[in-house]
Amino acid sequence: MTVREEKLTRRERLRRVAILCCEFMRNHAYYRTGFPGEPLEPREFWVTVNGNFLDQSVLVWGKLIGDRKAQHHWANIVSNPGKFKRKMLRHLKFDAEAFKKYRDSVHEYRDRFVAHLDAERVMRVPNLDPAKLSVEFYYAYIANKEVKPNDLFGLPANEAELRRYYDDRAAEAACVYAKINRGANT
Image (cartoon, rainbow, N blue to C red; front, top):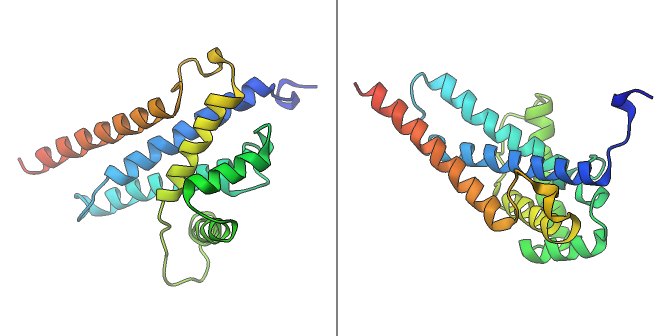
């Protein structure tokens, strides 16, 4: 058996979930902080950059929350998937049907515009607020119920630290955009 074929330990899987949660938060922060109005010049470059942050957020959310077959999907990771789902839905203020509808809308964007370019004429960008809330919930759940104290070494220790990580990435992006704007105006 090669190293590639070896199964990950539970600790490694949980750590990878935490890393993916941070990846989602970073990309979401960069996407949200991007150009809130008209894109910077060169326009096509900045539209692409911001779109890539959006697309990556959608892809990572699928790995964690949206795609049941994904290796790091919550139902394949947490010790009590039924309890997790009930609590997550309550946290999102969704019932099962509302969550399914939301998940389908994110998958539609992913499938028709990120993974493929189908014949759709109108792109419907999903609202990522529920995605962000669900990733925060997943992270908090594993941090509080699934990992040992040192398993998240070098990563946010809890939901509050994950939110601070998000805020720091948003501030970082705001500084970059401000610097670019200053340079463009000189």
